[in-house]
Image (cartoon, rainbow, N blue to C red; front, side):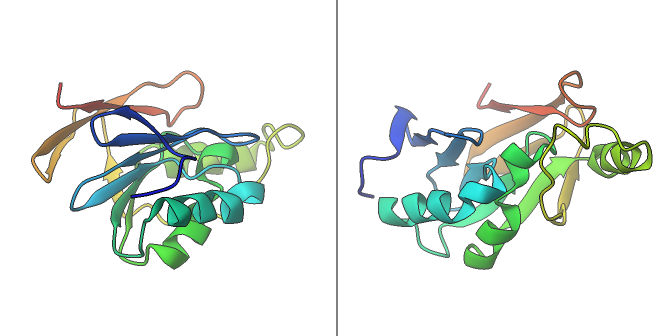
Length: 155
């Protein structure tokens, strides 16, 4: 992998620092993982940075959404078009949270709207997966949003 835009923050875990968007993390392994995809207005730029780093369409199998704000999930559709085999992992509470925001027009004046994308794998508090011998545990951490999740890697 090349490029100097992504910073290695731990063994095989890389950070693409957000500008208007959230940070994006890439976990390098056979079934690569991206955590959050950033703001929709930066999707092209963020995807280019990942490609310049050396990622090919087959390198990412999972995209984890930490919550449904568009600065975290706004690149999902764009990323899925490139990483066509990737599955989106997100909170079991996302659909309910998004529907409630729409029903009551909550935050319309302060939140950008991103094109919605499917959540292929819905997780709840305590769910654990083993992906390429890496243990991933999901924790529901509502507060910032009703569908916020945190991720614990290898304890």
